[in-house]
Image (cartoon, rainbow, N blue to C red):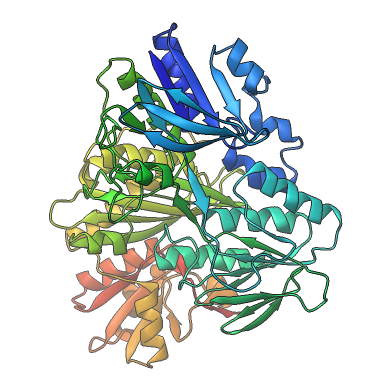
Length: 561
């Protein structure tokens, strides 16, 4: 069996290695245009920051062996042609025309099965000046080396990152590590589009506390060179200009589908990525595709989506190999799980955001739930800020988002499992999760969040979002904002126009609470706010709400001192 694989970074080498393990006498050839094979692209920001010391670490196995041409030949029995470009697929003749980029010589390779693992390409905005010096993407090892060389010159004092997605945010931390003043320019109303607005705003606030300037709703118009040296010195935006000794373009990626389109393979209308079936076959059953060049299916909505991730690419590579070797394995789709490091914060999401769930036609119920990531009395305890999204009608868990310095990855992973299994918030509330004070609270954050959503569904709690409350404050609406914390907490920080009524004193001070106005209760995390609302409900108050997430997840300015 002759298998040709076009692409040698993630999905391609994974598929090739699995094929050889299943069918040792198969002849597998990997075609890779670049010179670096099977490298950890997601590690590039950490190579730029210096956390990863040597370039070779990005290409090493867990045993410390470099994954180069000799490794694939001697260990895997694979033929790898790096520095080789695939030019054309002849489906009728079952062959690929290729060109050696060093010698410029062309040849052809015959195949029984073909795998497209062509990946994705960074989006370069159509604005003047993107070809100037010191303008980079962060998509490959060469990009990282270019950035590192500029940083080594210590001339990049001001850096502009255009795009506030995962790569842009991770690149920002790497640059700040080197002492750069960093400005993120993002044309959308928020960074990290994988999150809902209020969650992204919490991350923005934290990044700004680290000295990063975040400009949302701002469009880059041109990259200018005012020094005459051919290098960028300023970024012109629709809201002014920003000095820049270096610019990182992190707008996103688009799938590489030129070969597939030339070969007449079907391309997704919505995603513009290669369309595949659940066995990762293209519209030609002898041609498979995997990784950042293909569309996936959202397991919640059933709709096609494009979410390029290394984790997905590796899983798809394995599925492709199994099916090429005569197996029958389906790739089930994705729930959009992703997470990134933002200085000391994590920011993650799985499933649907609230706006995504509403667009998909769900009747959404959600809750913002802060809490400690382990028993609060443990010295290692850190805050974790969570948002949970569910379907009001069925109770089905639709999505979870997290940020904060606490341990968020394991909550995202548990939530991804629950979403994949079609679990409801009632199911999640009853999960038998592990508990020990150094690792979790007796009621884990996910369980607490599920219970808050259940309280809302069952009518025990009426929530109000921070954005809704902020509009009321700005409009000077007539309502009573009740702070249920202690006098000491209130004196330190509080919401504007709030009145202190400590929870312990509330029952004897009910006469001070107006019955003819809306009452909104809050505290640090809205637990005492919720208890205050129940006290008021028991006393006959009718229009009582609780601020979702309390002060911990309030994304706007607070009154200090």
